[in-house]
Length: 96
Image (cartoon, rainbow, N blue to C red; front, side):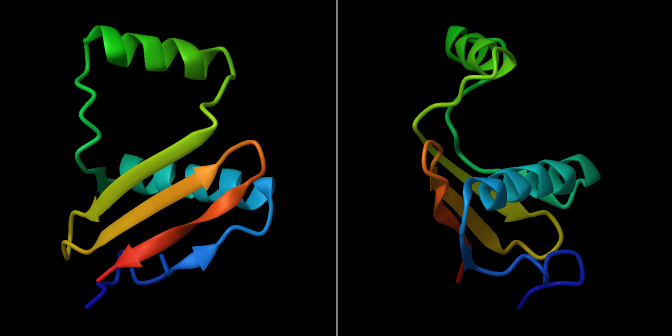
């Protein structure tokens, strides 16, 4: 059952690259607020892999495919964001 904090984060398919960007920004805001936390990306801060990914993002480059998993820190609901960044295809999914 969604809590007050994450109930508005409903499943949807991206309609455009702008929709993907909006969703990535929203996920970042919710992480900053402490509502969402990343789940199992396997990249540990301070590792060569994390440094390489940070360098790519700072340069403005994006990987062709992104896949992130999140968990609501309040109610424990899980979410996934999967997208083709070159086309803006993909979606945000509330996993049940």
